[in-house]
Length: 112
Length: 116
Image (cartoon, rainbow over all chains, first blue to last red; front, side, top):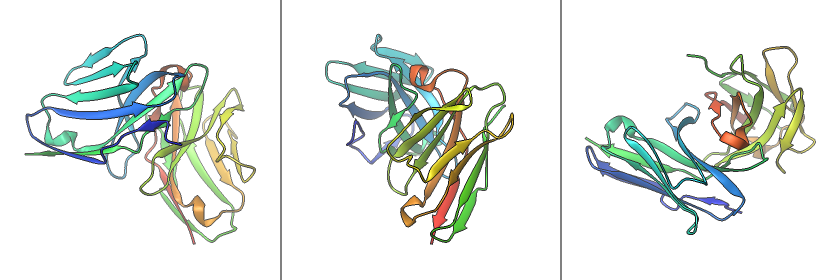
């Protein structure tokens, strides 16, 4: 039961270009969405989030877009840097719940 | 910078043995969580803990699992009788507000459990 789906297991992007990571969800009760970054042998690190009342949130090079009608969100990284190479997890939560539901992750490789 | 610490980093055990994974959450955090990631799969929620009791648990968190906050700093996950399918990376996390409402959890580096 994949309530949060990241259909691209991997993505390669040239340094300086835009990276776009996509995520789809099926549970209409989700009202808060997050992106986490994970390096090998480390735990996930919070990157950026967005509430369902917004359609965009920006933090430096990172922007998250939410399309509620399509149940789709995306993470844009501009410009991409080699240090951005990691696995990116999309996650979602529902009001009143303590748990995050994660996608399977997308491995981003930024090529110098 | 405050961080969540976990021990051991890797534990190998025989099937049927009891395992305790330990975590020290960030000191002023009130909400504590365990997640796990089986190799190649997604990170899965196990349990959340607040005010010295379980606030939410998943279907994975059956009677073989238990959590405890034995003192003011540690948060432990016990697996009573390990099975092969318990082999995974176990992540502890903490937050200062309910994770489901805002979502920003601080994760530890994980404890890799290998059940033989």
